[in-house]
Length: 148
Image (cartoon, rainbow, N blue to C red; front, side, top):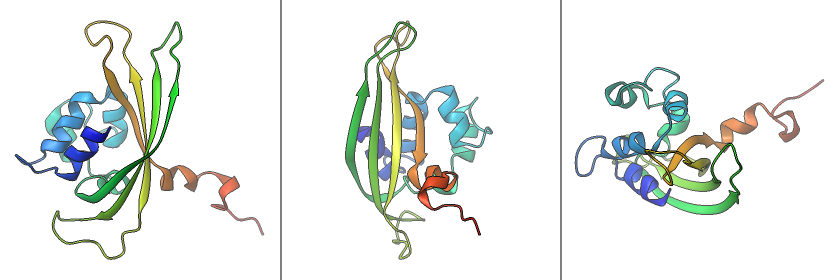
């Protein structure tokens, strides 16, 4: 996750969209689909075109990121080992240069799963990248909804 966050932080180095291209290689089909609102999971070109959701875009060109918390879950007979990693992102740069003065620190949960079958046996793939801000939008227990 650290390597992928670093690649996204320096998305256009050494070539345009190098960070997004690296993420493409390690993301599951479902993850690619979710990050592009189901528009760009089939080809890298479409992924690069649609991987600009407002929540996910905060990871691209971030000034700083920090790995905050890691949890691992043992594998079972039907799935490989899983890992959940919380990443803090600060000072998002919308155009890669200027810091967005209104950008607050955000947290993202990366969910990874170790593949159990060839050809990717033993490889960790990204199953989900979720902005925790958006996750709590639909959770009535966090004050996101009101009743009068």
